[in-house]
Image 1 (spheres, one colour):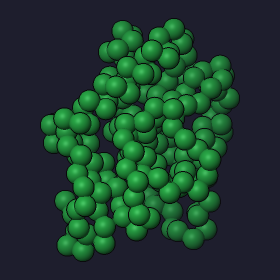
Image 2: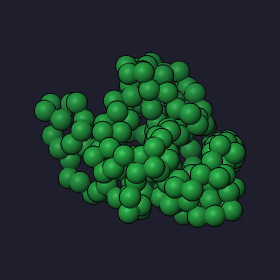
Image 3: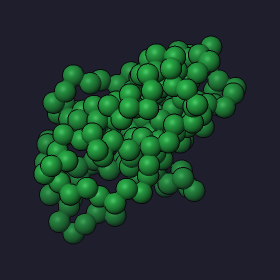
Image 4: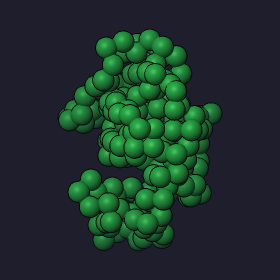
Length: 184
């Protein structure tokens, strides 16, 4: 689904993405098999489908349900004054009554400058004080502007800042998943 003005430069297919999910879930399970208050929280928008699938895969690896929540960092963005606020479809919803002492894994599909994750961390702390926050990312596209790095990473694709990276994760049909790098 590339617009006429965009050209696909690279595609990572469903088989590789499936392997990345299994590896990420395995790494999280190894690090947190005995962590009582573990929750995976997807960052809107692309982090929600990624985080849901990661929570399911991690639950399977650990052998117990790992709660999933979502976080909307819109009002913590540092560019809020220059961009119109989009209609909020996905509100912050964290499935713990008390986040104090919890381990939260923030999940997002693509990390670029790090600014969205910084905003998500601010929103997270507006909802409580977790003991630990870790980051799981499907694709790190480089070009970081803030010192934010994922603990759990599916792919690293060094991109030019003008390029775009789209994670197309189909919750109904994972065989059609793909990660696409496009340029104008």
